[in-house]
Image (tube, rainbow, N blue to C red; front, top):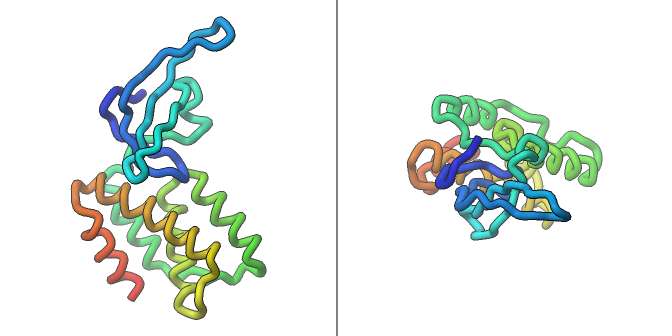
Length: 159
């Protein structure tokens, strides 16, 4: 599916580059792994090639689909109407783990809306930062633009 040098998105961690495809042996069985270096953090993740679908590893979003991401950001959301922070947190984490950039955009939108009405808690700020980083990095790389350009687009939507 991927080859060395391809960019791939690992849910919750973001965009990475396939640096190598290695074969490792465990208990007498050989298995191939993608060696993925995450662009933002320099973290390296080894993903079994036969487990790509289960972990949600995917290619970058197609540039033609990016306008739909910005549409999601512009749609009025619930603004945190889910009762407790712990339930919202669980829902947000599930959306981030999905690896679907539309769901990441929904999390970002909801937290921006909440921040308009009250100060975000530490946990909410961390989730907002994570969703923002995931979205900005992937959109910038997909468009071949600078992250600052994507951040400017976000600022226009939310302010």
